[in-house]
Amino acid sequence: MPSQSKVSSSEGQGRARTSAVKRACIIGSSDGIGVATAEALLAEGWEVVGLSRGASMLSHAHYTHFICDVTSDDYRRLLREQSAEPFQAVIYSVGIGEPVTLDDLSPDIRVLDVNLMAAVSTAAIVLPGMIAARQGSLIVLSSLADVLVSSEYPSYNASKAALSSYFEGLGTALRSSGVTVGYIRFGFVDTKMAKARIRPLMVSRQVAAGVVLRALRKRQRRVSFPVRMALLVSVLRFFQSVKRLFA
Image 1 (cartoon, rainbow, N blue to C red):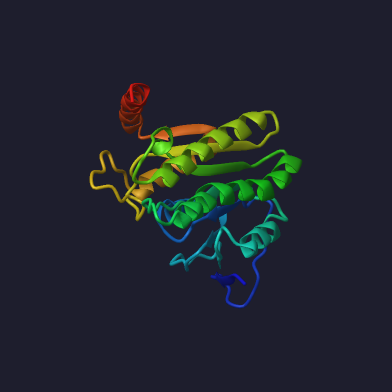
Image 2: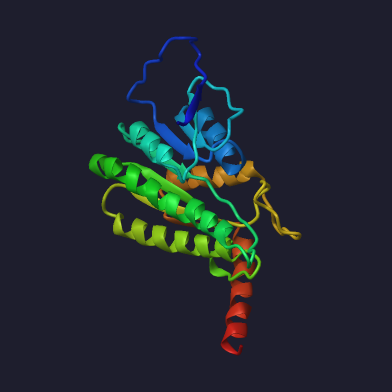
């Protein structure tokens, strides 16, 4: 069963929720971009529900945290319960990467389950309520690596390629529904996911959280950040394509 920790400004008492308070759910809220986004939304007066595999250091009257694994049945059950009243915003900020081990591909299955399939499951759970209410936003965090092929981390790049493609198509399908589905392609962000030896144009998690909030406010369906890194990746993609063409 998932565990729950809740911090309230009034110990032992529930708090009244007014219709003016906007609710957000952040999946992957215990560290990295997720926790920075939670902090930013709380500062703007949102009520935030966080779900992640680990405990949260956040302590705020409007923050509730649940511990669960996004690939588990408990996660899907808990998300359905929390989505009974549709969120105004859901942000999927979960991602893992593992180097390929040719004698055991099971870590690659885990990467695809976490980065892609759990995100699709999240959409399947939260979108019906949003669509019925004709409002709300779902944002998933992808990567500029979604256009590159990696022999070292093939499952990570493949999962992000599929994630970007799926949510771009889904967002286009829902463009007249009143609901926004978008994805953000980040370059290097200063989190535990930034494992490369060289990390050009790396940004802080606070800057990344600002990009998420801007996408939420502007109802953007596709964001690539930073732009200079996106241009560099486009050049790398061109050379990879040429290399494969003549291989």
